[in-house]
Image (cartoon, rainbow, N blue to C red):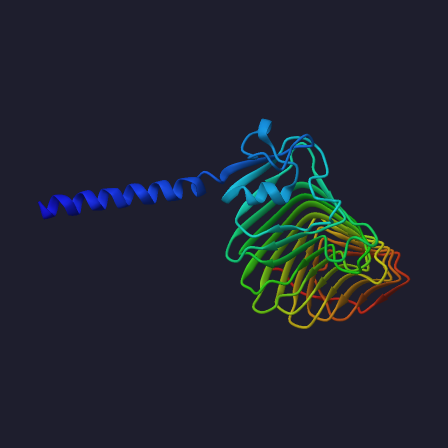
Amino acid sequence: MDRLLNLIAIVLAAMLLTVQWAPEANAQSLYTYVSSSGNDANTCYTPSTACATLPRAIAQNFGGGVVQCVDAANFNIIANHVNVVIDRSITINCVAGGAISAASFIINAPSQIVRLRNIGITGFSGYTFGSTIEIVAASQVYLENITSAGNPSGQPGIYDHRAGPALLHVRNSSIVHSEGAGIVVAPASGSIGVVLDNVASSYNKYGLAVGRGGRVMITNSTFTGNTVGGIQTDPGAIVDIDTSVVSFNPTGVLAGGSVTLSNSGINSNTTAISGATKSFGNNRLVANSVIGTAPTIVSGQ
């Protein structure tokens, strides 16, 4: 009899736990939606019950899920200038087009994977006070088809200052008209590995600035019309520039760290290069007012 009573007690306890946890389990979904006609009072679980803002869609999403934009709209709480904080593993996919204004994406998701696709971010004077995309913590961040335009805060367009090891991949994206640098990679500690593939960083203070521990591989990218320099590196940084163009900057490349050039054009700058760089001998330094520091030719391996 005692064994039977114990068994009944165990079953009842399990049932009670199930009832208690059921509402919380049902409070989030792997797929959530935002729409120009959405409402943040909705569940956000289907296109017809979409919410109105990205912060709400993220809050309703399980870690590892997808936030899908149903149409093109400003999916942020613009009246309150609320930043979009990402604190979990997530993919935000605005295939139909999506944007936020006056605020920033802040990625603070330790050990998580974050993907942002097809998003435009526009800053406004008096309302935007930080980077358009700031990466505080995450193991991997993937940015594709991102446009960051008009950040008047003096902060970078993309600012990655995680503690490494960490990875960042930026593809098919434009970072333009930031009063600070277009892209800053400045590890708090350790190293951050970065790939920039078909990226335009133009009309900023610097196109790219890399601090100690940043390891940046650049391909098919342009750094044009920046007010101080195209690409700048600190001691302890490593940058490889391949099949890319650095043009119309006061200084094309400011090399304080290790910079290697291959199949690239350093063209139409006031000074092409300042500081020691390495070249595979297949680059084009054309129409610069002065060459500056000529690269050291090295052999391929």
